[in-house]
Image (cartoon, rainbow, N blue to C red):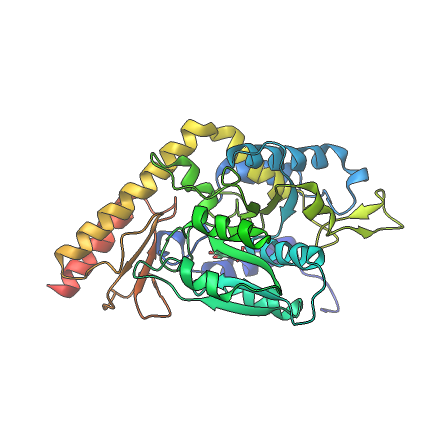
Length: 367
Ligand code: PLP
């Protein structure tokens, strides 16, 4: 600590200096987060001092969290879904597996989870924390989970099968109906990690099935702080049935409520209301417009890159474009998949002008 405080002016001059070192979003093609929408920022500021960890003190904020769960449940074809606002996909995935483990009848062996090889690294954290064996299913030629291989890995010690709707690296949607059928046959829940795709797929003109409409899908992770343009941190975990949700309950003797279902104790209301604000502000039609723009930019960047001979790795289901390894001009921030493909995420802040400028620079480099 400083012995004496500094003036507000000096403080903010210093903070702005640090902020200036961050990469501006106008150069970021590598992130699944984006610039929060102004209504999210406004709602966040209005609820900045609220704590959803003690909802009895903030019943208005808690009602908005319940409305967010209801809105997302309805979007995912199950208005009666239950759940809560998490800090993001990592927490949602940990908690989904925790619920599945609690509900799994005890067997002799080590309990396991069957996940696609494309699963986000949050599942490694979840399995480590919950002492679960993680069985990784190979992918098919389009980077989707191979159902036959998955069937060969499920056994009596499996507590959950995981599918991804909008994979982090390639933007693919796993074959959820076939995996859900397998899950039902094996009497285990299917958890769908739709952290990224959950706020893309429902707004596409021809959406792939991934949500509660598919029997066997028992939980879904979705992140408003990704394609929902909320402030960070805003995730959501939804369960089809209260039985799974209540498997997460612990007693909370000194709070305004008797039980808590969340992983964090103290939880910010600001981003949760920010997430709801964006959905309310846009509605279905507004979100469809946003997603249409992101998908058009995805198609445009693929077409543009291929004219320089930088070919796509796969045609994505959502707005993540991947390419054969290639040099990228300096100022642009793109990422690389574990297979060495170039990866570009066409988030809402990546407008057409940015795509064209990137393609021009790529063209100069590859001419
Ligand atoms: N699941 C998927 C499919 C993701 O793409 C990500 C992050 O990119 C996560 C989970 C983890 O989300 P978070 O970083 O919000 O914890």
